[in-house]
Length: 111
Image (cartoon, rainbow, N blue to C red; front, side, top):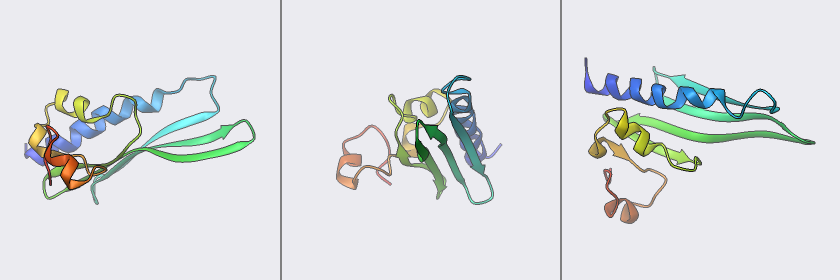
């Protein structure tokens, strides 16, 4: 199997469990959105928080030039360690939401 296909599978494996949150009593839904054709993977939060409608992105990952670019990550622990645990090498993960200078001192790819 092509390494990039393994990375795509790892992203979906890591993001799918978010659909089970926050639980059946909540009025919020977490939706995993996978576009393999264009290599966009998201978790969005949709629903109502009291009188306020919620629609936000929790996680956004793109596959660009064979690397996983985490464009947005609002999870407490971050999805990068989960991707590493799922078999994605650190040098194939880019923390796109950080400046290039901050990426250079991270344990992940700069670009």
